[in-house]
Image 1: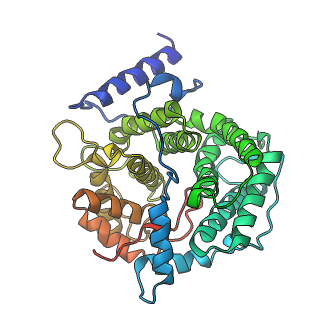
Image 2: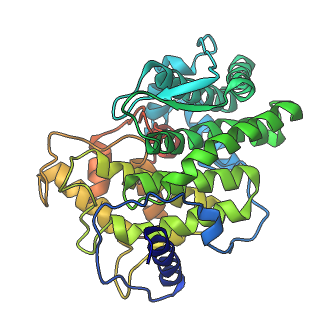
Image 3: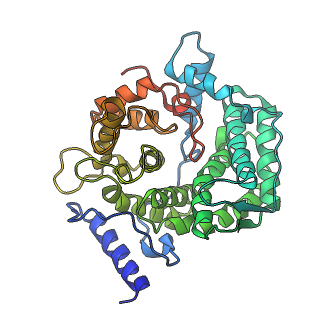
Length: 390
């Protein structure tokens, strides 16, 4: 059997296993990847039912209202403290100087200046869109629109620096796509489209998103943090575009990956072999995907179990990571590290709402408050999901 055929067979088999109510996994495979071109939308049949809820990535209309209320309140709160930290990021200023590029050079395992420009402008678009929704300052709205319109009109694709292979562009796109989509989602849908973002500009952005998706979707084939990032990007594309095929492909791929990323012991893949940082890329991606799915009416990522396990598998990974950070337990001592930004408050909120205890992870979250920029994923989870009842 060819390598491509083997991968397709394995992918289809995993899809069937995930679909089964009592699915179990006999093995916990190592970090592997397929060199084959991967199209998640072609391997999984759609299951979610439109219409999609908007705003519907990480921000709902109610959540935006909650952030505004916390910021305007005279009382201190985790959310208010987190938002004040968000305000310290100058990329969220309406005076931020953006610069769209026709192509972005990707540098392996480093990050070149063009890559940095693209990432920073994406976060600037998101931060300005969020600040407009919270404060009503139209200067932030205008800046977010200017950034998105500039990149949508100019960007044609990624190039590779010498010594950089093509998959690095897949990963960069997978990280960046949900950031850009989240900014556009707020502009397009907050308060019934109050931003007044022209339809022609929305159409150009949709083309930009498709170009990013063409790269990001390839990362979904990997069975490490790359695959999680690719699945999240696929879900985000589906929500923004009201595309059930893309959304469900990403969602189902994420559920395929959970037991491959979080082992039955709770150990998170890459923690033993790499460091304290990369495993949390996976945890961040899963948490953000779980929140995205919940907004669309599906709690299956939070509650995913293997066989007759008592606790959801993802919650076990969070607890394992927290014990490594708090006490140095497990396969790696991470006491000199902290929680990666952008997912802790989302995860605490998600599991508190489901009645699933994650006491150690809650303690680690409190210790790390408020979180800031995550560099790869959307950060500032205290600003958007912080709560004061734990």
